[in-house]
Image 1: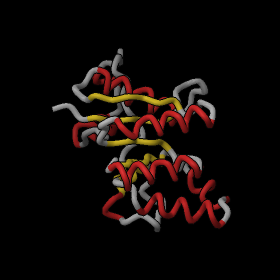
Image 2: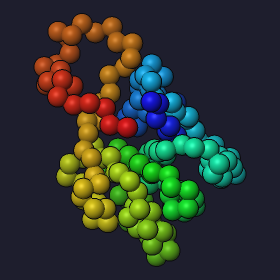
Image 3: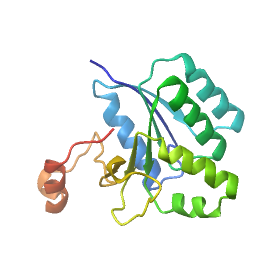
Length: 173
Protein backbone atom coordinates (compact mmCIF):
# COMPACT_ATOMS: atom_id res chain seq x y z
CA UNK A 1 0.00 0.00 0.00
CA UNK A 2 1.28 3.45 -0.87
CA UNK A 3 1.76 6.04 1.82
CA UNK A 4 0.59 9.56 1.23
CA UNK A 5 3.12 12.24 2.01
CA UNK A 6 3.55 15.98 1.53
CA UNK A 7 7.09 17.30 1.74
CA UNK A 8 7.64 21.03 2.16
CA UNK A 9 11.15 22.40 1.77
CA UNK A 10 13.54 24.22 -0.56
CA UNK A 11 15.49 22.85 -3.50
CA UNK A 12 18.79 24.12 -4.91
CA UNK A 13 19.88 26.72 -5.74
CA UNK A 14 21.31 27.77 -3.38
CA UNK A 15 23.30 24.59 -3.00
CA UNK A 16 23.78 23.59 0.60
CA UNK A 17 23.32 20.77 3.05
CA UNK A 18 19.57 21.06 3.57
CA UNK A 19 18.62 21.68 -0.06
CA UNK A 20 20.79 18.78 -1.27
CA UNK A 21 19.31 16.54 1.46
CA UNK A 22 15.78 17.38 0.26
CA UNK A 23 16.71 16.95 -3.42
CA UNK A 24 18.18 13.48 -2.78
CA UNK A 25 15.24 12.48 -0.57
CA UNK A 26 12.86 13.39 -3.41
CA UNK A 27 14.97 11.42 -5.91
CA UNK A 28 14.74 8.33 -3.69
CA UNK A 29 11.00 8.80 -3.22
CA UNK A 30 10.44 9.13 -6.97
CA UNK A 31 11.90 5.63 -7.57
CA UNK A 32 10.06 4.11 -4.60
CA UNK A 33 6.47 3.05 -4.04
CA UNK A 34 5.77 6.04 -1.81
CA UNK A 35 3.26 8.54 -3.18
CA UNK A 36 4.26 12.09 -2.35
CA UNK A 37 3.72 15.72 -3.28
CA UNK A 38 6.43 18.37 -2.93
CA UNK A 39 5.89 22.04 -2.14
CA UNK A 40 8.76 24.50 -2.59
CA UNK A 41 8.90 26.85 0.41
CA UNK A 42 10.61 29.58 -1.61
CA UNK A 43 7.19 30.80 -2.71
CA UNK A 44 5.44 33.95 -1.50
CA UNK A 45 3.40 34.09 1.70
CA UNK A 46 0.13 33.93 -0.24
CA UNK A 47 1.33 30.86 -2.18
CA UNK A 48 2.28 29.11 1.05
CA UNK A 49 -1.09 29.89 2.63
CA UNK A 50 -2.98 28.75 -0.49
CA UNK A 51 -0.98 25.52 -0.62
CA UNK A 52 -1.63 24.50 2.98
CA UNK A 53 -5.28 25.53 2.81
CA UNK A 54 -5.67 23.44 -0.37
CA UNK A 55 -4.49 20.39 1.59
CA UNK A 56 -7.50 20.41 3.90
CA UNK A 57 -9.56 18.12 1.67
CA UNK A 58 -6.72 15.86 0.45
CA UNK A 59 -6.10 12.58 2.17
CA UNK A 60 -2.42 12.90 2.91
CA UNK A 61 -1.25 10.99 5.95
CA UNK A 62 1.96 12.88 6.71
CA UNK A 63 3.22 16.42 6.14
CA UNK A 64 7.01 16.54 6.41
CA UNK A 65 8.51 20.02 6.76
CA UNK A 66 12.11 21.11 7.00
CA UNK A 67 12.98 23.62 9.70
CA UNK A 68 10.82 25.32 12.30
CA UNK A 69 8.80 27.23 9.67
CA UNK A 70 7.43 30.72 9.92
CA UNK A 71 4.95 31.26 12.78
CA UNK A 72 1.91 31.49 10.48
CA UNK A 73 2.91 28.18 8.82
CA UNK A 74 3.34 26.57 12.26
CA UNK A 75 -0.19 27.71 13.10
CA UNK A 76 -1.62 26.31 9.85
CA UNK A 77 0.17 23.00 10.39
CA UNK A 78 -1.18 22.87 13.93
CA UNK A 79 -4.72 23.29 12.56
CA UNK A 80 -4.10 20.55 9.99
CA UNK A 81 -2.83 18.31 12.78
CA UNK A 82 -5.64 18.95 15.26
CA UNK A 83 -8.69 19.22 13.05
CA UNK A 84 -7.77 17.14 10.00
CA UNK A 85 -5.65 14.44 11.67
CA UNK A 86 -2.50 15.11 9.65
CA UNK A 87 0.74 13.81 11.10
CA UNK A 88 3.41 16.48 11.09
CA UNK A 89 7.09 15.53 10.87
CA UNK A 90 9.71 18.26 11.32
CA UNK A 91 13.30 17.81 10.19
CA UNK A 92 15.81 20.06 11.92
CA UNK A 93 18.98 19.69 9.90
CA UNK A 94 21.03 22.60 11.20
CA UNK A 95 21.46 24.89 14.18
CA UNK A 96 19.61 27.81 12.53
CA UNK A 97 16.27 26.53 13.83
CA UNK A 98 17.44 26.95 17.42
CA UNK A 99 18.69 30.46 16.65
CA UNK A 100 15.31 31.45 15.17
CA UNK A 101 13.45 30.01 18.16
CA UNK A 102 15.56 32.07 20.55
CA UNK A 103 14.86 35.23 18.52
CA UNK A 104 11.05 34.80 18.64
CA UNK A 105 8.89 37.15 20.68
CA UNK A 106 6.54 35.77 23.37
CA UNK A 107 3.61 35.01 21.03
CA UNK A 108 5.86 33.39 18.42
CA UNK A 109 7.53 31.24 21.09
CA UNK A 110 4.14 30.18 22.47
CA UNK A 111 3.02 29.25 18.94
CA UNK A 112 6.27 27.33 18.29
CA UNK A 113 6.00 25.46 21.61
CA UNK A 114 2.41 24.47 20.86
CA UNK A 115 3.46 23.38 17.36
CA UNK A 116 6.44 21.30 18.53
CA UNK A 117 4.46 19.64 21.33
CA UNK A 118 1.96 18.40 18.74
CA UNK A 119 4.27 17.14 16.00
CA UNK A 120 4.34 13.41 15.32
CA UNK A 121 8.14 13.20 15.02
CA UNK A 122 11.17 15.49 15.02
CA UNK A 123 14.08 14.33 12.90
CA UNK A 124 17.40 15.78 14.05
CA UNK A 125 20.90 15.28 12.70
CA UNK A 126 22.54 16.54 15.87
CA UNK A 127 22.41 14.06 18.77
CA UNK A 128 23.61 16.79 21.12
CA UNK A 129 20.88 19.23 20.17
CA UNK A 130 18.54 20.02 23.01
CA UNK A 131 14.86 20.16 22.10
CA UNK A 132 13.38 20.33 25.61
CA UNK A 133 9.86 21.08 24.37
CA UNK A 134 9.57 17.77 22.50
CA UNK A 135 9.10 14.42 24.21
CA UNK A 136 12.33 12.45 23.69
CA UNK A 137 10.39 9.47 22.31
CA UNK A 138 9.32 11.66 19.36
CA UNK A 139 12.91 12.58 18.37
CA UNK A 140 14.73 10.50 15.76
CA UNK A 141 18.42 11.08 15.09
CA UNK A 142 19.70 10.36 11.58
CA UNK A 143 22.74 11.04 9.46
CA UNK A 144 22.19 14.09 7.26
CA UNK A 145 23.87 12.33 4.33
CA UNK A 146 21.71 10.67 1.68
CA UNK A 147 23.43 9.01 -1.27
CA UNK A 148 22.37 10.29 -4.67
CA UNK A 149 20.14 7.90 -6.62
CA UNK A 150 22.52 7.99 -9.58
CA UNK A 151 25.90 7.56 -7.96
CA UNK A 152 28.90 6.63 -10.12
CA UNK A 153 31.05 5.69 -7.14
CA UNK A 154 32.35 2.18 -6.83
CA UNK A 155 31.37 0.71 -3.42
CA UNK A 156 35.07 0.49 -2.53
CA UNK A 157 35.45 4.25 -3.07
CA UNK A 158 32.84 4.99 -0.41
CA UNK A 159 34.42 5.43 3.03
CA UNK A 160 34.04 2.36 5.26
CA UNK A 161 32.31 4.36 8.01
CA UNK A 162 29.54 5.46 5.62
CA UNK A 163 29.11 1.94 4.17
CA UNK A 164 28.75 0.52 7.70
CA UNK A 165 26.26 3.21 8.67
CA UNK A 166 24.15 2.67 5.53
CA UNK A 167 24.07 -1.10 6.04
CA UNK A 168 22.66 -0.65 9.57
CA UNK A 169 20.11 2.12 8.94
CA UNK A 170 17.05 2.60 6.82
CA UNK A 171 15.65 5.87 5.58
CA UNK A 172 13.26 7.64 7.91
CA UNK A 173 10.35 9.38 6.24
